[in-house]
Length: 214
Ligand code: DX5
Ligand code: ZN
Image (cartoon, rainbow, N blue to C red; front, side, top):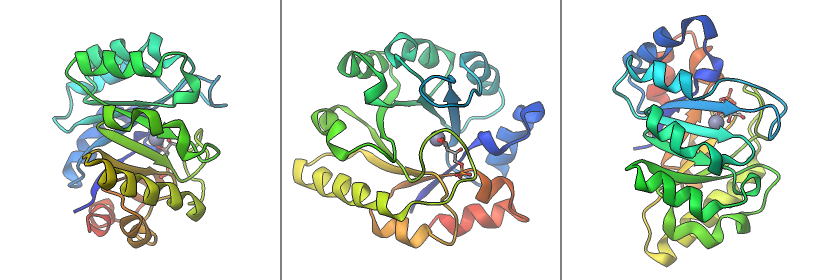
């Protein structure tokens, strides 16, 4: 079954504690936390104090997606703040292997992200090191964009490589995912999907989550 990770980027920022409790009540699997620094992406959200604060309000895994430059400087602090999974964009890092190693040394799951404008090859050298391969289906930076179907090719490649290499990383799709394209995501090999607008703006978020757990 596909795991659903609602993104709190689409929540009311004045009510983040309530948002993560809602995510749990709606029957979702992970909480997706989008960290943006205004440099790697043209938007700014929140940092490790938010992860630390939210940790007390949910027992669901916190899936922390770092859209920041030089992630190797901060991954350890996000682990210490209570992240269960930390992913980052390798082209923003000067030490991808070292950052993955540091995350793992903290007992936290690690992953890499392929942005919509990046090729699959940027993650290829690290596939045996990761627990999670996050494939963007929009250009990172904002919620509420439309799903880019052409990015699914990279998910298929991720699945192919996983089989060929005998690995077991999760494949997570992020951006514009909704019940209307969840079949396509599944066919492309997704094991986890991020859903911001399609859950938080749904009339019935519980039903929206359930519709994607296929
Ligand atoms: C975009 C973020 C996504 C975003 C998804 O840069 O990484 O996680 O919150 O939001 P929707 O589902 O609305 O596209
Ligand atoms: Zn994200």
